[in-house]
Length: 375
Image 1 (tube, helix red, strand yellow):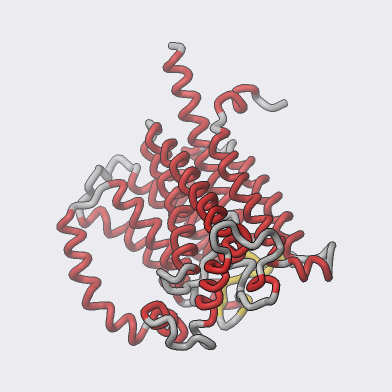
Image 2 (cartoon, one colour; image 1 turned 45 degrees about the vertical axis):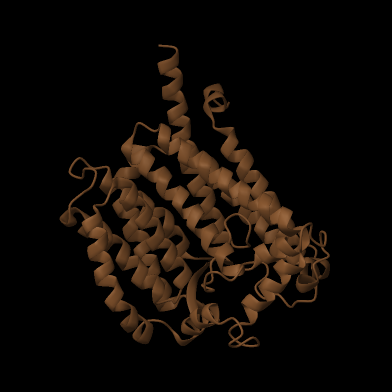
């Protein structure tokens, strides 16, 4: 029997915003995979996405019963386990298009780097909420969390997966700014990073990654090569105009001009079929979801919980921001999916876990507020 208090104290607004985004995702994936679905009605990626979605909701439901203090004590073990998985990926992971990002288990593939996004949030939240760390910590107190981020980032870059590496750094940076950082440290970091730009460009970035950056600066540099993806994406988005061409009527999608259309470029599929209005609705839904999650953090009276919520919100925010910026041509193509919209099992389960942990903390906040109100 479900506890009635769980329903009464649950923040349903987050779930309604999430469900609206997921419905948009399913419509877009169905359209992007329509040919495959017609050819194989019972065995296609759309069916797999639904199965992953069911698993994601199960994970979300289970996370509502997580003991936050227990989670905090387990964070170092979770961090070490996922870090080990990242090393295993580099050794025996499945290689696709020159990248080793996936492990295969029971016929399903998953990306350990996706789970590292959640684990790094929990680990950093545990560290910054300890009694030894105050707001605006000194440089010595920032050394450990920066080290905790750098290690998985280097392993992810070795796969290579620039998009996930950027996401990890963006999440960590958001959490550090939330805790508080002195301006002199920001200036020192900038003075340290600027001289490293050229060596990183010359010796760290892969040739295809360099081409993507150059394409961003000069879109017509290689229209049939490195610039093909972004060129076709812009054509699809522009052809949607105000109202779009209608469901299943996108020509760039239907005629297979648009590459990676069910994963990285799913926003282009939605934009072509539903136009500017559809894009505005999707972006507003993401803004609403982020606002609702940050509202939970603002109401929190628990430092660890508020840091977890901020980190999970940053996970969704930066992933959406980078993906949309990428497909409209204002950011380089880095291979990152649109949260809850793109096809991808590991990403979907990870994001559902993130929402579940946010909803769990919102549940605790609502219970405390109700106790205070009727005290």
